[in-house]
Length: 357
Image (cartoon, rainbow, N blue to C red; front, top):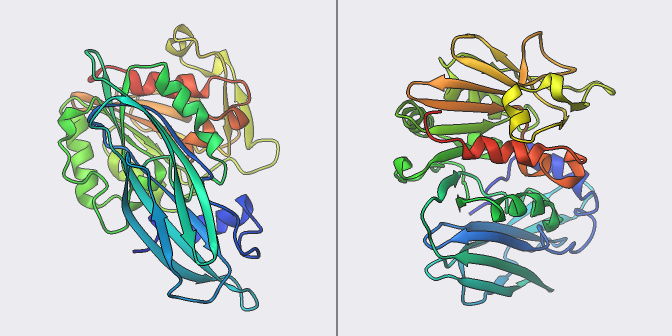
């Protein structure tokens, strides 16, 4: 089975994240750690990572030894070639799930051997007992995923946000050709988050189910940008008829693609929630096509047209949809990209809004 996000665009992006990966024999696991933060008993918690070896053996062996609280869901190898003069690179992909049947602090290491390379991947999770007042979030694509980053500390802003909130988060892996919403009962969730990677793999039935869930009173949040090809088109399929449309463009010009927005660019409701400033890099604009339904929460800058927003919220039947013009949401809220602004606080507020409001 190939890696869950083995698309040409992601591979090209990976060259910039880790330019030596096609040259060296092994660069260690990616991400280098899986600290999954706080979850609750009964949650679905999935993650993945990969290894690489510069070898031309298609049958290279991949072995995984996992601690008791980790279940290996899938492991596979795939050979890729980068350029006519480069060596073949063997990708070893490992997908895991966390046992959440009992509360506790779980820490350990996965020992992974790919060919002649053996590494340890730290993995941890805090499983809490369920309690009243939890808000169930369906994260249709886990951020703890093999194509996101080499540096597992990039997820810290998200895990800190979850730790300090009543979010009962479920994390799913996505795969091409399979429904991203699986056969889950969406009515059991307070919010469904469809990030760009999940949108790319979303099937027509997923789009239909997400829209039906929103129209019955649910909260759907989509995040997309042209940098992940196809995500804007699929986001617009979810948003169609709700008074907003994502533009398939992004702020690309130097001096315009890196913006910090302040009070005058934000909806007054955000100031009441403590959101004072936001940072966007290569943000994508969202047009309001029906002012009776949609409302700009964060004004777009350096791209798009007058009246566009980087974050727009709209009525969808009895529920709401929210569009965010960013693809790598977990990076967008990280300390490195947020640059001292309130990106994480904004995302937390959007995910915590009661159904139908």
